[in-house]
Length: 455
Image (tube, rainbow, N blue to C red; front, side, top):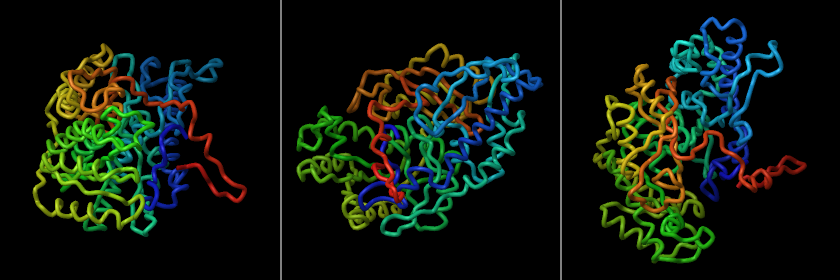
């Protein structure tokens, strides 16, 4: 309803039923919202009903969630209206995809693991500074009951009747950006080759797939498809967004360092890759050849992908290269940092190796939070960096391959149930707002129930 497009693809490369998938689908997101909000209600009810766990209302860290962009809910006050209506305190909302429950659902291997992870969620701290968990509130059983169907993967199909599994949706700029472990492992048992998406730029989605999901699920990818477009390269080369359809070989050349950095990043994990160029009608042969030549200099093949216009026939070249790489036996996958590193060392490794930063600046709040997490025994967890998808830096205006910058860490959150530390950089928000012209203004439904405007 905000600025992002649909999540079902487009043209002859989409999954169906598109309208259902983009709106309510099977209700998984609603179930996650309900489970999250149940825990919120039980925390406040515990404080209201005598507070046996000695929870400090000023240190309740479990926000509420809603599956809608609503900036007015970022900071709120709850419990007003007198003693019967609760204990007044500051609170706030995140968007559902940023909920730890979403991350837990996507990283759990079964219902038992789901309940175990839910019980470890830190919801607050007591007056002595000790963490209080969802298990102590006795919420994990009811939460899991609400999620018992949501944990099951959803089988859909492409326009060409190819099976596809869609499950979960933690955005990669504010969460870990991968579909569920259950979905991936189910697909691996059903097919000879399983391809999974790690959302947004490879500095976000791929990094978290490798360092979080693969670490916990024991996955060892055989190959990587790094998706690029001529349009994006021209944007990183300094062209105005409104002019990207205009041929400009020099702008493509100026934007290639961005793609080059992504290639280098993937190679650091020991996995072979192919660059897939999603073709647009306006792309010229000269522009495409510039990309192919540059990648060849780096020892990487380029495959053109025209699946939007041609469906499966437009992806044959890419599919053959993926199979070749997967069968080559050249993958030697390894996460970019070990568990034993401190949280700050992990943050600085990602900032230096993946983003190309010169260093990291920490706010006082971030410093305090990281020290506390280490003290509580969470130092071996991986880090989940929340950052803009538009730049390697934490400034969305620094396009291309920026150099000479530092990453600023504003704050950190512990997701003890999911098993990672969320690191908030720059101006990233876990509750987005609507743009000046929301996509919702263009969405409609006809009298006979046909939905329009979702593309």
